[in-house]
Length: 65
Image (cartoon, rainbow, N blue to C red; front, side):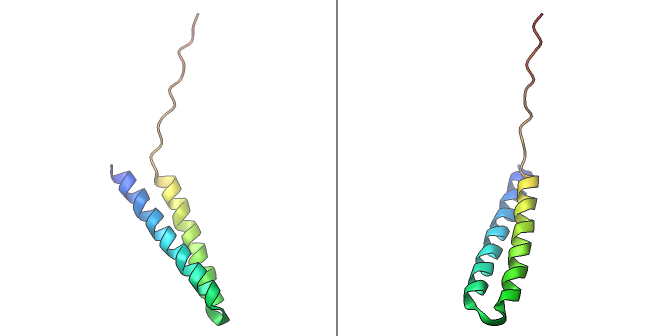
């Protein structure tokens, strides 16, 4: 259960940083530095959320014969 919470937390942080990146990119000027940094961290946190999300083990078929 804790892995779902951790993955959810990482996903929320990633989404928030992605929104900051978009907002900074639309602001123009020197905010593109913030947009780039926030986008990179958002990508990283999204990857962490994907890696932490628990996966079900595939059941192998029993051999017949």
